[in-house]
Length: 544
Image 1 (cartoon, helix red, strand yellow):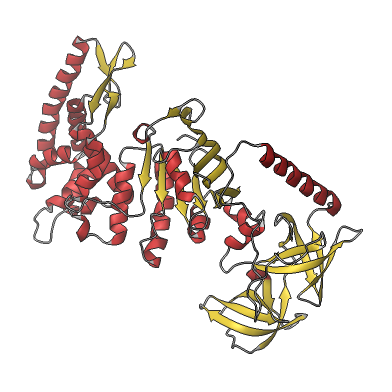
Image 2 (cartoon, one colour):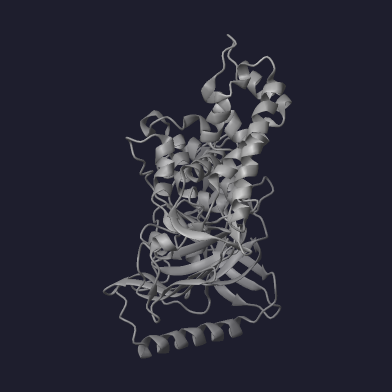
């Protein structure tokens, strides 16, 4: 399956930028999740790749084909991009059966396709299905009711799935009435002989035209597969429908209507319909948002399995970070039309490159502590946190903080010059540094608007699981809130009027007002620059 490359993709309406200069490389056979808050540009990005929305500028490439280029005037329509799109609502036809819903799009395909000998394929499928009479006998016995009567619907489905044949071929085999025969082997041989004769005649007819038929039953002339602008045959449509029905496990529901299905079953039908034309890329726009929590979890496993079985490239839009973390090979985190970080799920969680990424990823959210101090000669940092506590931060790797500041200021100066000299339309939705969240008992949000920020102002990011209740802990706290789930408890801990979130694993119980000792585990702590919001380093911390 193809890789996808977005180069300087921008989408704006007037001065409003939905997507601003997005560069993205989606690797072959990957499962990419576009994550972010509502209105960040997720769906717009998806629709631009699919061809449902036209970018203002930039280039989009799917595999070796440029499907959009503003400079060259290229804009390939959606139906020519070989992509599938799964919408948030299932959009199933209520008056059509499951089979008809899946096959509907296939019936409308008309393009240059290989010339197929469908009759030869059907004949060969019959021969192949009848050759092992022991297996046939076993299938018949599995499809008998207690009365001894054959369950036709079950038998047809069993034949279709066992031999990978169309329902038309399965019905033809059913009409042989072998399931009622007392001499199944003898009768099967008779039908095999008849169809072998037919097969030989069909092959001879091709030979008379200096043609051959390959293993896919495509007609070959002078070493080249013959093609023709045509529609799919009923046999091809049926094989495609059955193929995707097996993948999403809805074979028993083919004659039902959408109203007779559960929400999860309807979603499977929508997925099957999207997969039927064998798209190179599958786009999904929050497809699980209408399902309940339990069903959503089950469908996540199904989507993972589908990704492996189909080998397609999946691009998935969601605002649910749990879906993103569990499904993705990589996450594209966006905010205000800008790419914030494009990384592996665990890398995004463990080393978010700015305050927005750190705050958005993780449930419960990360703890932010204002830290004031500077770097020591030995490379460590000494900070004042929680008003009167001393914290010593040791980065994973040695670096010079002054050099980091100089690089930060140089980048900002360069960006300012680019903005001034650019012919770019002035952006209405201005890019802003993320306003980090500091929780206090009497004050929830801290604003930097009226605060003079210097190079001694930092932010420490501490994940809730790094704060543990410990009888030997050096920090005293009061339990301000407790939410046990059985497997863990999420606590709100009051330290000097600051509220820190902690996740305590196990079945411990806590009561509001309890006094506890806590320890901040001294590793995987994040250090951010308060002025720019960018990640400086990760390391360990000791709070006294």
